[in-house]
Length: 379
Image (cartoon, rainbow, N blue to C red; front, side):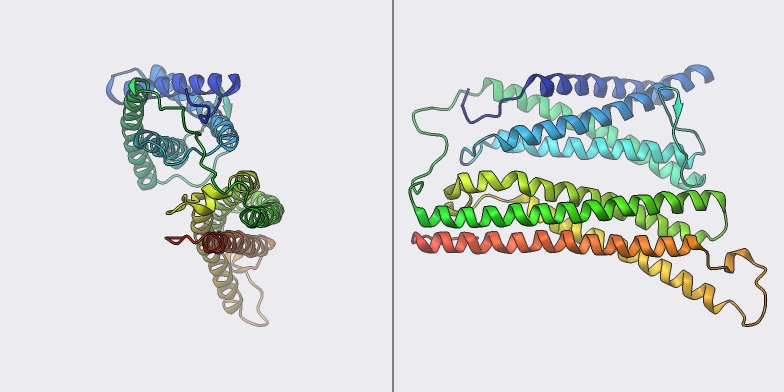
């Protein structure tokens, strides 16, 4: 085995196999509930067990992803990977995305069907209102994601077998090429970008974390107020946009923290990140820009709906006449939703700016590095 492969600890191994067993159990329970006839009590027990195992597997999946990222950070780059390694990495990413889609669509199906989501016997808070159309749509997404996940896991298993049968690479050449390791100018460029990456990563992380904490409190207050007062359906639309924006904000907050973790490998291996043509794809900068754009659009939708609602209520109030319709009264709930949408919009602008600035900075650092060593090529 090459010394550049990641060394996984006992925690990752146990979590990985626990997730594999939970996934097989979930696929088996889902197949039984979908195709085998059962009585009412038996179906209720299977559904509750399926939901509880699914939420447990989602929590284990988060642990596995965190441990995998940590092990990847400690691994030194080893040049161009084998095609099976690249395909396996993309299959893992696809499996994580499908598992997230399974969890979200399953919870949405139960919520829109008017059923209570129970986690090992403990009922979870309800959300939204019953909607047969959305419940059916969520159910279709859940079934399609389950079939796709089974296919992805089968393909990943085949790649694992092919990798085990693949001959071991030669170890006569060092795994990491660093012919310019003694170049002080290249090291200075790498250290400068590494400091910039770490600084902007921490700034983006803490600012977005504070905004996410405040918005989570406002969202909790607004959700509780909406449950106590069933009027004003337009506020519910703004709440949905704000909830999506908050979820995207948590993802971008995690990416900013990941920037700080990747700063050290960039400084330690400048030739790999700046000298190769074409250079390695720094996917996390592109992902941060993409999530930032989505967050800005979703939060802007919440701001627009909130402002339209306030203007409509203000225009509909006749001067000098008491308001008898509760849906036309401007309440504190409307102000909370508008404030939360503005905070989310500011936070996503910060995340988008940090990712875009670092993406431009790494392109400039590569250009300086290659000019200093007489190299050219794609940035």
